[in-house]
Amino acid sequence: MEFHIEDIEDGGWIPERFAFGVPDSDRRMRFGANRNPALHWSGAPAGTRTMVLIMHDDDVPARADDVNREGRTIAVDFPRARFYHWLTVDLPPNSEGFLEGSASKKVTAHGKDKKIGPLGGRQGLNDFTGFMSSDPEMAGNYFGYDGPCPPWNDERLHHYHFTLYATDLESCPVEEGYAGADLEAALEGHIMDSARISGVYSLYPPLLEERPRKPADED
Image (cartoon, rainbow, N blue to C red; front, side, top):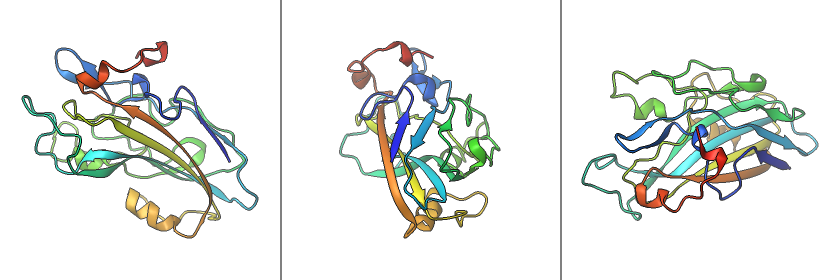
């Protein structure tokens, strides 16, 4: 199965226009354009009934004690946890994919109430739902895509995995408002093929100095 993401190469830096948070010299971080990238696929195996998309980051600090705190950094070997950025089920396998900005075009305070995404796919709640829950200005249900926003004081480079699954499910058995763990459990025994593209991103100044600059990195 072939899988392609426009402007994201496997192992390469994710352009800033796809990020929830981008570097800011005065405030450390500001909101980015938060556009979803364009995805394309082909060659799903015979018998595929629907496709599923999961985007996640396994480099998120397991505890938020020192996240974005002045005078503190989060060490590379600090315990980590999984964070889901995008969950979509019931995508048609015979489609060629969907366009940039079709699931997200900006950061939306209190979350996007976008349960139905590109190609009619049913979108789940990403983990910004929990992360923002204590912030009155941002708390809400975050459906669909919200891009990278790692802590600006995290010494570890974050890896964002876009995984496309071909399944034998006519409709994935998850309810409205499903989370990443719900989806992964529902996929067990139903995956016919999969393909993954992983990009990297950081807001930590020393890592940003190593970042290659390209026109696609601009907002």
